[in-house]
Image 1 (cartoon, rainbow, N blue to C red):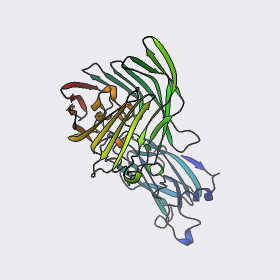
Image 2: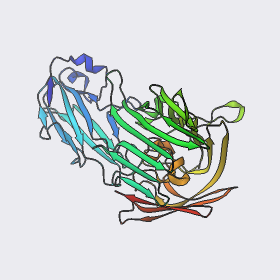
Image 3: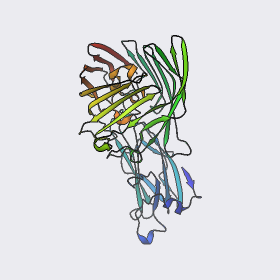
Image 4: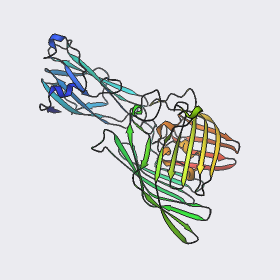
Amino acid sequence: MKLIKTITLMALCVLAVGSCMTDEDYKQRGFIVGQPYDNVKNINESYHYANQTTDTLMFVAYNNWNLTSITNNDWVTIGDGTTTSGKGPASYLMVVNFKKNETGSYRKGIFKLNDAEEPDKAYSTFSFYQFATRTDGSLGSSPLVKSITGSDSSSISISYDDHDRPTAISMKDGAMKRDISFTYDRPSSSSYDRVTAKQERYEYTFRDTTYATGLLSTEGYYKPSVVMDINIKTYMPYLLGILQNAGSGTLTKTVRGQSTTTTVQAMSAYQRMVGANNNYVNFEEAFAFFDECGPIYNRQQLYVRKDSKFEPDNLILADTIIFDKYTPDGNTASTTYRITYSDDDNGTTNIDANQLLYGVGQCNPYALLGFMRLARFSKRIATASSNKGNITMSAELNSNKSINTLTIDNNGKTTTYTFSY
C-alpha cells in the first residue's frame, strides 16, 4: 500500500466521485475512487480478460476507513492482501493482482469502502470484472498449443509469455516459411497496451519466382471498441483493430538465379465493408480482415449470422465467408463458402483452429493466434461449401475438450493436423 499525501483531494475529484454521504458530512466523510473507473459507463468498475492479472486501486478517504469484500474475492489481492483499514484524510494507491481466470465462467469481485465511524453514511463500492475468455478469445482454462504438425509435412510452432500471450510463431508449408515474434508494452506516451510484431522471415515461391522478405515490423494498440472505427453495440474494453506498418522492409525476388530487391510494407487489420449507396455496413452484419505483406494479400469477408452477440465471452458465427487471394502477378482469386458448424466450442483450444481450413500455407497467423478477436467463431467449422466443392473439418478431442487431431478434407485431399501442448 502506498500512502500519498502530496496528491490534493481536488486533483482526484476530477477523476470520479463514487461515494455516498450527506451534505453536512461532505467535508469530513466519504471517498473519491479514481481507479477502477470506466469512462464509458461512468462507474467504478474495470474489465479484464482471463489472462490479465493486474490493475490499480486509487482513492481518497476523508476519514479513517475500512475495506470489506461484498462477493467471494479470493481471486483478487489488493496491496499485500492484508490491508483492510487505514487513516484519513489521505490518498491511497495500491496495486491489485488477479489470479488467471481458469474457471470457464466470467466473475466479478465487488469491494466496499466504509467510513470507520459512520459506515452507513459514507461509503463507496468498486468492482473488478474478469471475463472467462482471454484476449485471444479462447477460454482461460484452455491449454496452450505449442506445436501443430500436418500429415502433409507442414508445421506450426508457438511460444508464449507468462500471460498466455504468443511471443513467437514459426510456420512451414513446402517452400513457404514464416517467422514472427511479438513483444508487449505500454509506451509512456499512450494510455493503451501495445503489441509489436516483427516478421523476421517470410519466404515463398510463386511459379518460377522465389520471394523473401527482410525484417518487417508492425504494431497495434489494444483500445476500447468505442474509440475505434468498429461499429458494434456491445462494449469491449480491449480490442486490437490493426497491426500497421512500423517501418519498411525489403523484398527480394529471385528468378533463375537473378535477384532484385524492392521496399515493401506489411499490415494486418479489420476492414469495414461497403454496402448500398456506398455506405459502410455495420460490423454486426458483415466485415472483413486481411493479412498483407508486400505482393501477398489474403482477405476473408465475413457475413455475420443474426444471432451473433459480439460480446467478450460470446463470439460470432458467420453464414458466409468470401476468401480473396491476391497473388504476386496482380491476379485475384475469390471463393465464396457457405458455412456450417459442429457443436465443438472453438475456445477450448487457445488458437483459432478454423484458420487451418485453407492449410498452413494460406493461414493468417494473426487470426490463428487470436489477434483478430472479432473474427474468431464461437464454434468450429464443420463444412465450407463452394462451387468448387466442399471442405470438411472434423476433430478428435482430448478429455479437456482441446483438440488432439484436426482433419481437413478438401475435395478428397485430406490433411490431418496433430496438436501438442
